Amino acid sequence: MEMLSVKNIGISFGGLQAVDSFSITINKGELYGLIGPNGAGKTTVFNLLTGVYKPDMGQIFLEGENITGLSTIEINKAGIARTFQNIRLFKNMSVLDNVKCGLHNNYKYSSASGILRLPSYFKTERIMNEQAYEILKVFDLDKEAKLLSSNLPYGKQRKLEIARALATNPKLLLLDEPAAGMNPSETEELMDTIRLVREKYDVTILLIEHDMKLVAGICEKIFVLNFGVKLANGLPQDVLNDPEVIKAYLGE
Amino acid sequence: MKAQLVKMKSQVQKLNRSTRSNVITIGVIVIAYTICMSMIKAGNMSNLLQNLLVAMCYYAIMAVSLNLTVGILGQLSLGHAGFMCIGAFTGAFFSKIMVGTIDNVLIRFTLAILIGAAMAGLFGVLIGIVVLRLRGDYLAIVTLAFGEIIKNVLNVLYIGYDSRGIHFSVNDTASLNLEEGGMVIIKGAQGISGTPRNSTFTIGVILLILTYLVIVNLINSRSGRAIMAIRDNHIAAESIGIDITKYKILAFSISAALAGVAGVLYSHNIATVQSTKFGYNTSILILVFVVLGGMGNLRGSIIAAILLTVLPEYLRFMRDYRMLIYAIVLIVMMIFNWAPACVNWRKKHSLKGFIDNKIRKKAKEEA
Image (cartoon, rainbow over all chains, first blue to last red; front, side):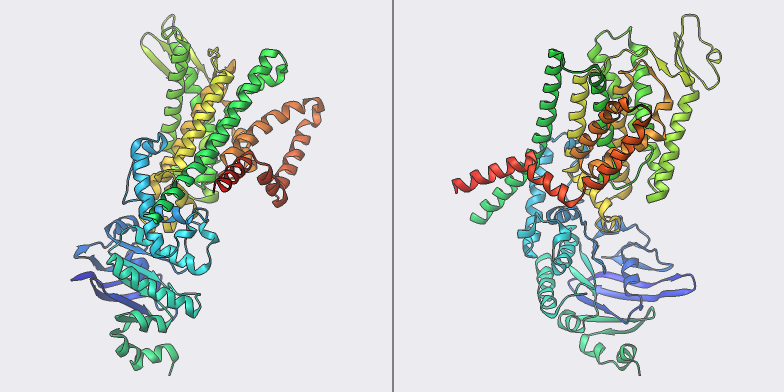
């Protein structure tokens, strides 16, 4: 079953065609990798998928539903959540509150019942706390729940960002360089976490990564992007041995 | 089972800690209030200070409410006095019309406060929709402009009241065309005079506590988290589905409504309300309270507002040098208030820290 189906999307900034006729189909439950040299347009693809940029052409379907041109908020509600290349946590809030922000649209009560402390406030907050702790436990962050998120070590901040994205209960999770800046053992741990998340939350994952070990280790399919156009697409062993791909990365 | 118990316990402890901190703050306000009242009864308080008591309350409410916009929402607003102005004029207008109709002072004043807050909140929504698309310096300049617009419109506005209803004019009293026996209520630059002076220190303190509770409860709720998420990173907030426009306007209008409350308190404490009072200087003064007290720190805002309201009055003996000394004191406070050594000293000697320690020690002994 198709989770995400992207048909010929493209965008240009001034004279630069950042992404050109990008098409990809991701099936439910797949773990897809999106790779490419620096400046290939990978993050632009993420920004197109999440509505930060509106595509000049093409269409995006999530589970058959057309989500082209929707706002970031509507796309998140439709079921796409993402993390960022440069970590974007809510720095002055606790780890727990970061996750509870992710739960924002799943559990609701009005602002007035929050201010007046009506019973619905206590009831919903209790459920939110339980949910948030459950998610934090999966990422082994429950002991740091009260800590300010900016005081977490780098690797855990990356994990918390994934936890916050998962709290929105997405169908499709987009991870933008989750292993950037991590040492080999941290990367190893992250790979385990990503596998665990996929099993436990039943999400489809598309990730951008430069760490070939991680990509080859967990991705089931790989899409290679270069100068905004497709270079290769398929199984990891085929793609990574493709002479065109090697040329793009290493030169002739 | 055991893990669940531990989890529940930690949740209870968290709830306790934030509630405890609020109880302490409100407790300190109530104790300060009791001391002031007993001093007045015993005749120990100078006239100077007695006249300042209500002013402290409305400035503290202004500071706490501006902190919601500046510290919690993270948007710089330089027109906060404009909302106070709307609250002051609306509240005074209502009281003057109703002075013969509603005899019960408490009911009339409560209604005046609610109407003043609602009107200021309404303007908060209207102005918020327009200005909150902007950020940073641009937002600051536009809010400054709106504050001045409100002040200047009220400076030329004439409103009268007779049996046929309410009449408006921007020219003079004569063009209101009032019937005989009609009453001119807002007289342009002369403002409103003769508002019943219903504001008392007790009402001021009650309103201050209510304002504090509204903002604290808002911060610790789902909406408050959304507001702070926007402050910390609006791109990430959008990516997890938080409606940025909605929560910006919500915070801005609640802040405006509470400024309106302070305005009603002000207008019922003074013989004549004139719009020139609510200019740029007042907005900046409130911002100084917020910055000195600490962004996002409600308790700090209250303390800063009280200290800086009292200080210039006590510097009156310096005559011409008064504002000079005030400025120097302000600079010194700004430099040293958030110095690490000073922050540590405050932490060590704070009432909250003291009580927290006591509770921790007791828990240890029991264990």
